[in-house]
Length: 141
Image (cartoon, rainbow, N blue to C red):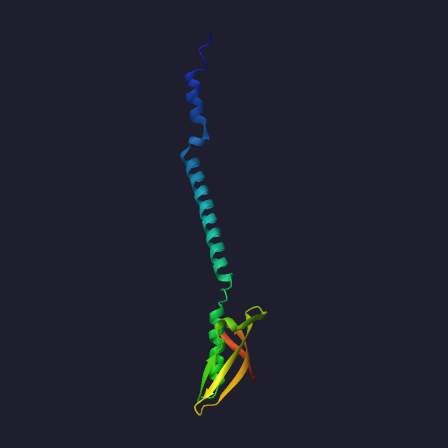
């Protein structure tokens, strides 16, 4: 029967193993930490780029409010405006960050007269992300 490998050879093999060297272990740890740091930086950059580059969603009520304000600014000061309900407004896409809002408005004057108008307000998003009227067309109806 054989007694197996000599224990002195085991000790010699363990001492010659570079995986137990403190400098090797330190370099491996530094390499792993550097790769982890690069991974974290890449993930954070992707998250930030996605948040910055993703356009803000368009809200229907926001477009309608800006169009109504544009019509109010163009209306005579002595009248009262009555707009159609928000569900009756028609919103069309004219391009990226450009929309047309169509609706109806009733102008009531102080002397009791009323006039019916149709309007088309083209809206564009500014660099700050705020909607601004680009063109307003009001026609009697």
